[in-house]
Length: 76
Image (tube, rainbow, N blue to C red):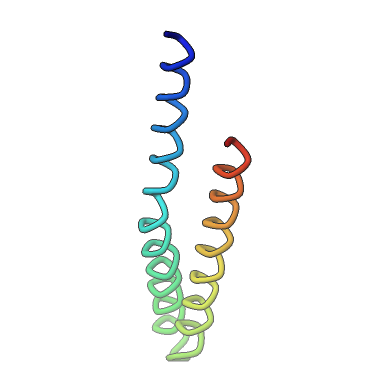
């Protein structure tokens, strides 16, 4: 009985980790865009920092998703 409970909670934990992926895909680039846009407006350099920070947001999201999936696969 307790083994089934442990297996169930392990599966729920994995499901929760995997459902965080869409949030990570959206938040990283959004934060990068707004941070870069703010810097561009402050120093009148549009669009350079917006583009750089947007790309950095994508890279950060991809890195975090990779680490998350690596953790989930390791737990199997």
